[in-house]
Picture 1 (spheres, rainbow, N blue to C red):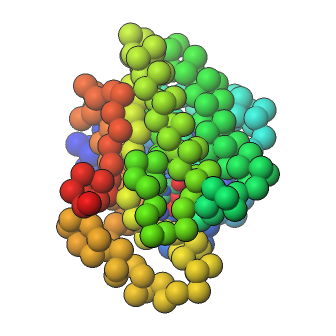
Picture 2 (cartoon, rainbow, N blue to C red; picture 1 turned 30 degrees about the vertical axis):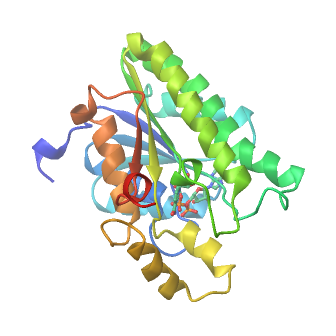
Length: 269
Ligand SMILES: NC(=O)c1ccc[n+]([C@@H]2O[C@H](COP(=O)([O-])OP(=O)(O)OC[C@H]3O[C@@H](n4cnc5c(N)ncnc54)[C@H](O)[C@@H]3O)[C@@H](O)[C@H]2O)c1
């Protein structure tokens, strides 16, 4: 690691869903590792301590700095506690990455009120409450960057698929939240952006696909061919976009929804 790469030196970042839900690397894990490589101190938030621990081990093995806050984001008071523990550990907050999510391929008609409420609690209410807790800390520092990891599922319908109505609705809600807070807190030096992953091969997606009973490897190849670049996305592709947006190279960018999807949203019908 060279000094020139340490673009986030002195920054404190909170990453939610910093573990991976299965073997391999999820986006929260990749984002946490990359921000730590760039010099940030990273607070790893996950519902499962052991998942966050794997990310912590990876960061520490490279000489980076991080700590774990175990929390279930479905519980509203946990959002303020995460920020309080971050301030206690590292003295402030500069970066908030709202990455944790639950997902389910369930059509509108099959969605129970309970599933809808759980999805909105984790995917939208928690990012809302975490932003509400973290932005005052950023205002104290005179700078800050918030990222909402959304999904192209909120931009495109799922024609031919089973649908994911509650998931899409919760992710679209993040876009509205981003637009409002980017405008309101911009004058205080806070930048707010959305990164919308396309079809990324992560443990979460593997779990959803496994439930279909189809050949996952074949499905992955078919999905890759549905992108303009015809390649498979990994969690590192999302992490690189996030690190760019929160770092100095993204200093004039706010209120943007960036699809990271190998051209699916803009180019594929
Ligand atoms: N994989 C894709 O193709 C894809 C596509 C679009 C968007 N995304 C988005 O990327 C993000 C990460 O997805 P991933 O595929 O890396 O997931 P992942 O399942 O590998 O990791 C998610 C992590 O979040 C944690 N988490 C889940 N619910 C939580 C809760 N209530 N409280 C605290 N932690 C919780 C899990 O324990 C897990 O460690 C999500 O926002 C997802 O919607 C992924």
